[in-house]
Length: 317
Image (cartoon, rainbow, N blue to C red; front, top):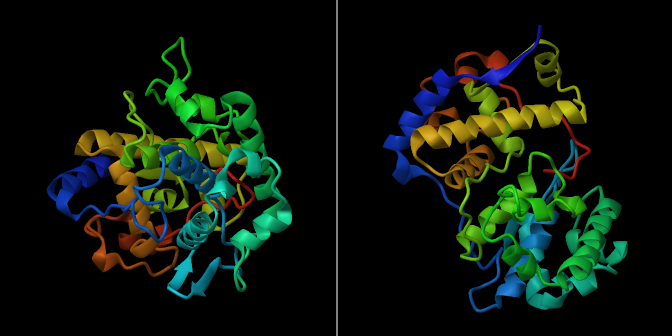
């Protein structure tokens, strides 16, 4: 018998800690000049940049092949390196992110942009296709303006039964077709905190591997049977299992947000950073620094110190 569900007792305990520790929640700085455009750039330029970067924000490292490099201004890894290279390209040529350019972009250009030293994404051909698809459809559907897409949403993330919302419009692009809407919610969060989008309906949390790992380790999400054995033994799961796991994880964080009184996007900032710096993808995370160490299931029982479920070949997250 298999079980995949949410432990509401764990959610209750975590929510109480979050209520008491709101000042300790970590936040992303979406105006950090190393990674994001400044306030002086036009709204359309910022919208284009963020849309392209989120479209590229998936699966940068693989086993034995970490996406990291040292540049003149420091060493970067994973998403930090991706966004640093993105911002450097933006500073050099903002028109690189224009739909007209993207619609005809070549693999060599994408590889040159996203590769430095030994760091190179394994899926350059796929990323090129995603960028071309994004450029072509923005031109055909929105006259090449991301702002037109945002305006068409009427500040809704999802449809109201009559008109589609932001995430619904994004689904036409291959980069944003994930049924769990990780990239769509991440882009919406970025735009919201940049003051470019103010949704009137409730968002979901953008579920990636860091949030999933924390949910499994803390006990927020409970898995047993075949699926747990696959997770424990790091066997790659199917696409349907991946979607199922992340849907439950999404629901768990939504419940945590509701009980703690924090927005899911605030929680996303904190838990994403927590997963990169404390509850790291290692058999020995930095548990002493964790605010949930008193009852974390994996800290009490090392058998639950899993990485997360294994699913490499995706552009969803």
